[in-house]
Length: 462
Image (cartoon, rainbow, N blue to C red; front, side, top):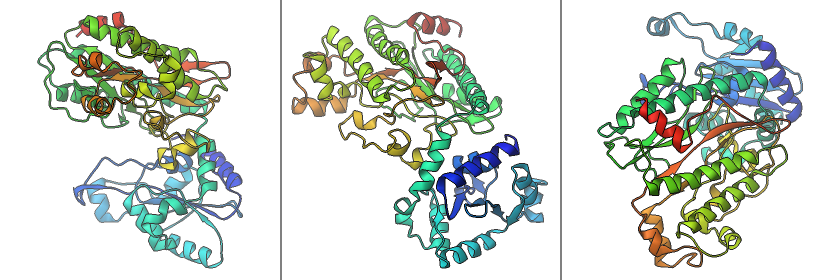
């Protein structure tokens, strides 16, 4: 964890932002896979981690906006717990590490919240995303579980976002470490992507890199020869000659900070001419986005320009047609590029997505409902301290192609006869992570092989 002074400063800033009442920050509990003693890997709530720094289950914190007091609540372990887990620090000792001197058990938290509510004090809480925290809010504040998101405090949501969106120098050290480890994961996968190797074997090796570095993966690994399925977590295929292998994977450091990269590599070590054509368009789109990064530019404009690059490239291949701007306005590019361009990243790989994309990525501006554009998670003006991904892709999704073709949807801009010949192509993408600086941008972590020459050269090392 960071020094206690950092957590004291963060909590005081949040108190001032919210203004009045009590701020309730819920940590996460253990979550069982199939019975209570067989749990998933524990992951602390990121906002609790940001303000309290403690990576232990069954904790909750209170920030009193009027008195300036911080209180940490949790139940102490029993001797029976210690038999299985070994000696553990007390809640009081943990609290002192992050500048909290007052503690209590969970029963006292319930009493405090009941008394505060009876006196008309506002209790601010964030939208709950875990069932056990929805139940706690119901038991303590009578918030019906289905209403947890609606009843959440907008003042607290914005207060948290306005701190976590801007990464400090110490946070950036952690994110760079996560990105460095993530690059190692991807270069290993590029070297392993040979005919006869299974997706599962690569997945296991990639995860080992993250764990061996002292952390974890930042999200379930996507390792697939079916890149047209955007979030494909099936790992049962055997790689064969002529396939493209797509890896979307990132490391999470011991402190919880994420990396997120994507790569695409030809399984036989050489891109075919058709693969090279599509990969080059996608990479041009990717590099165009990078060249535009600077403070003040709306990320939505970066997305539009990357889409134009894809439209022009696909026109040159005969897959699209017509006026580029008209095709863009009508969303014709979304047949091939149905996702967004990137997302904020930090303690969450999709940073603060639980708090609402309209607040995190759009600063309150309404999102588009147009297919493709509606999946753009980040649209707001970029500011120094923002950390986010760049990830354009080109995908040939047979089911989507069939659906659009039946009604000749965007037929003025799509050559469906030509597209039919690409229905078995699959999909590809590249992804890297960036920081906006005062004067431009910084690639986070060491460079990942992404040019055609570099990807093919990395394959040879396997």
